[in-house]
Length: 242
Image 1 (tube, rainbow, N blue to C red):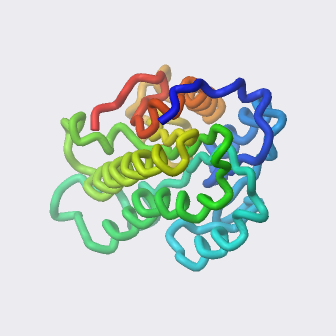
Image 2: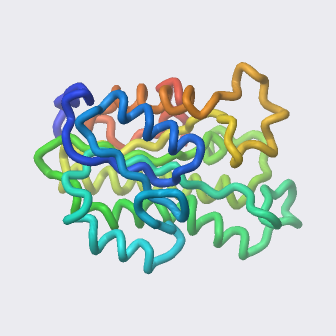
């Protein structure tokens, strides 16, 4: 495992893939383009994206995998911002009686399995001789050690599962892609549709614009090296308990 630091992103060349073209995803793409002008920024998502991708659909992931080596290499930065907290009848559970299998399965498909299967799909495009970032948005509510409020069964459990899956991926890539750095990121609460139903309970100073959230997240990634691969970090760079 290397301990070499990453060069300044301003000098990086290749491609970057932002998955989930929502508020934070769009802001990340814009800010990364400013910080790394040598990278071609690509977006992927179910709509309004360069590449059509549904993380919960195996055929969609297989199509990405089939084209990744030719269309995306060398892929230097991958940031997954896709997540599912609520969608119509799917809402965070307040009590055990509200838990149902379909909601659990939908949440795990997007929030847990999706990021790992994304890594599998793009692996062939990742260079082995240059630094690589693979990051995915997690959430503090996915911390088992920090869970003091309960509720939100499906989302909490799926994010905790994502953390374990990508921590395991980081260990494997330390052997196979020693210049790759895997990072799980808690972005704080951003003013996006995902958090909109719950924004009233957040103090104004703690509710970030997507642009501010993107800046914080890229600041954290710029400080990450392969020696710290597999970390679960908050927007301010502080470790989040597993």
